[in-house]
Length: 173
Image (cartoon, rainbow, N blue to C red):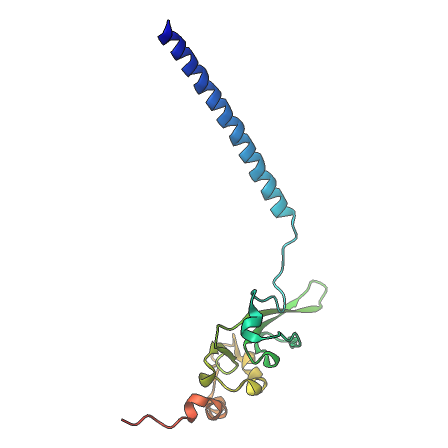
């Protein structure tokens, strides 16, 4: 008698556990579908000018939002923020024939600045002075051009005297 009752109760418990599992799975599936629906319905957040990481003030100080992209593509040092911030500018043609200039802002790594000559973040001693950056904005015009180097001899002659590392006396053994 006791064994039969135990088997009966065990069978009932197993059926109940399976039923509970199915209900839980249905709830999880319903929740997942609801989350997907919300995610799809939300407008896509576009990265915009001066959307920078939290804590940027600790590296840059008070961020000046004065830079505006010129109507051309390229990478541009933000001189008003000591070149610790740079911008990627992208001109987009719209269906109606007009153009829109998209601006994306980035922060260089700690203790680096955007070197407008190399179009990279670099240590200040390896970069042209920030105040000279605008003199090298024209290099952006060469990006994507076939058979055209980013720098020619005259560019090097203009930049090398400005880069602090090249001004130091040569190392002597």
